[in-house]
Length: 183
Image (cartoon, rainbow, N blue to C red; front, top):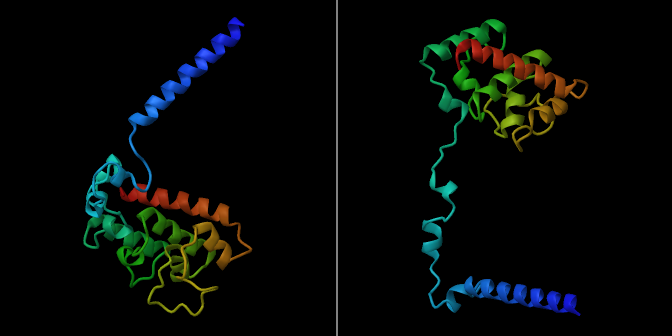
């Protein structure tokens, strides 16, 4: 009997405590502003977020924001990649890396293109989702229609290649190149 009384007392305390906390939170739901006595205002919600992470403005960094065609580093990268056969003689790193999210991703794509004998413009179009002004008639599939991962783009363009291993190898080569260049 004592156990039953103890269980009922604890349950009653928990229920009353929970109800007190729920009423302290105020009205919620679609009609909360009306129930609280304030008029809904669209501008108050749009102008200020209560999320502190959204208070910090972040500008998206792209490969082009990391590159300056006139800098010594970028001239060295361009010369190095042209000597390795990654870039044609009339192309610089800044123009080749346009639309890539990062310089690492661009250099990795350059290495994949060179290692597997793929057309860089087709690979670039598949990875960035942006169709370039270059001739895309030789590309497999419909380049530039959606963003693909590097592995997916390799599989689409050269199904017989080991996409994962090739991507890892190219990432390693890109890290080494950028480390040497101080990027």
